[in-house]
Length: 406
Image 1 (cartoon, rainbow, N blue to C red):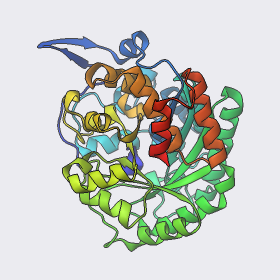
Image 2 (cartoon, one colour):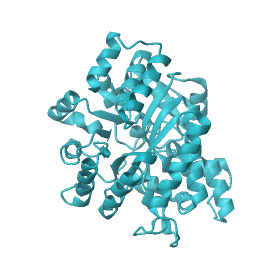
Image 3 (tube, helix red, strand yellow):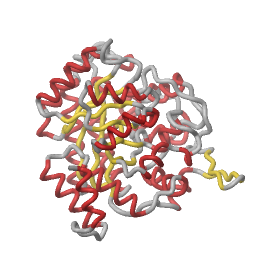
Image 4 (cartoon, helix red, strand yellow):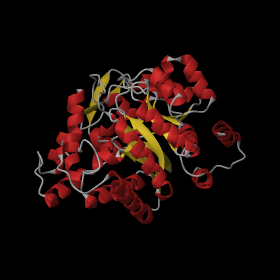
């Protein structure tokens, strides 16, 4: 969910699956392994993939944090990559304060710095290309990377001259450079913050301004207890987004109840749901969303480490989504904080949730169809997957995928 979606969120204690001291359970036996070992040795799906839910500020390289801090003369709590990983990565069950502290340890290094913001966007695209991603939608709050035209100024920065508007421009530049260099497609989603409704109209205006420059949607992240009845600024922003043809996704039903999902769909007119696991606790709503072919942006590793889902992956809600042929994607959310890659989410789904290669193909085709690309680009993306998967459009499998996305 990234720091832009964490304010006020409760985190349940649980066994940490990833990071240095992770464990995998085989029967009644437990074997320790490092994430690097797990990712290097096993790739769950070695074919082109789509990723729709990942936060830019939760996907930085530790090396970049150190490099930028040195250039800016900022003192960090550690001077080495391993030292900063120990600080930035969740190694054991975390409280909310500890989780937020992970972002506070480095965001002041990147925020307000033009060169750094453009760089992290470009490097993000490179990292996704290495994971076999051919299309990614990355989200972030432009206000949380700015140091002027934002109140309050985040991360205890002094007021500077980098506005949320210019942040979006810089991220767009970095993503475009990454696209050209690494031959994948990258688009962005701008986040509103539930605890800062005063920012939301600014966000939708930025979505409108940069609609033809890489921004494809608006998102709402943060404490799910802060509903739109109490904070009407978000509803007003989403109404304007819908009026202007701006695509809409909402973090809902991650740790909040199914009612938050219902509000996202009925009040905010969400076209996709970020996480949405607790939708299953309202079967009437769940069946309604299945019929509507609502897309759920699922993040397996994240959902375990944040306490959003049961610590036993064999009981994860995405298993129900899979069995019900729901429309969903697999995503990393915050790979820096979870010390993970998309490969780990896929191998976890394969090893613990009964996923097959055919299901990976189906979910990626659905993900492409649920992307926020213009229709012509979306069709081209889907066709790339067909070709990469050795499939033809007139098969029963693909017809089913196309019908469900209609």
